[in-house]
Image (tube, rainbow, N blue to C red; front, top):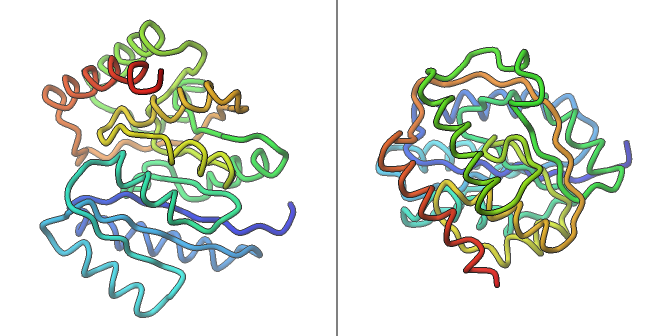
Length: 236
């Protein structure tokens, strides 16, 4: 693979119980790589010790950066991290590392080969899902995707997997236009990519559900649906 500089963006909200474990895994993984990297953690107004933990990591390793913002939403956190990043390739991942860090090895070669966006998918090969969500959450995810296909665009099997990679130019074009702050931001990002005629590739990734998910199945699902119907109107 060509010489690269990777930015890993991690949105975080009240992650004091998980963020240290994830950062330790990332640091151990990157210590074995021959490319340059940075980790940007965007704290979305946490009320626990998340920000202080990141500051402690930063004091020991300047490759880890903390961005603090008021609580706006995951979409805003990812957007701010992507636009602050310096990497030629920029990947965001969930703070719980439901997708293991080594799955970068699937995304980076595809971006390096010229694809604008490479996204992880839990739906292409279901055997890669090692720990499943409760059945009702999986059903809700499938139902949400049907609404995406109906209201926004077709062709993406799993829009919501929290493991997506972008070239720097794609990230800057997309996230400078993005406006959705909540959990439907993934759909808006892919919609903008399609509007811009960017190339998108889905790859099956290993995935482990973390039962401590912060997504509320009722209030957040309602909010996500309302965000969905706004996307086309926001980008006429």
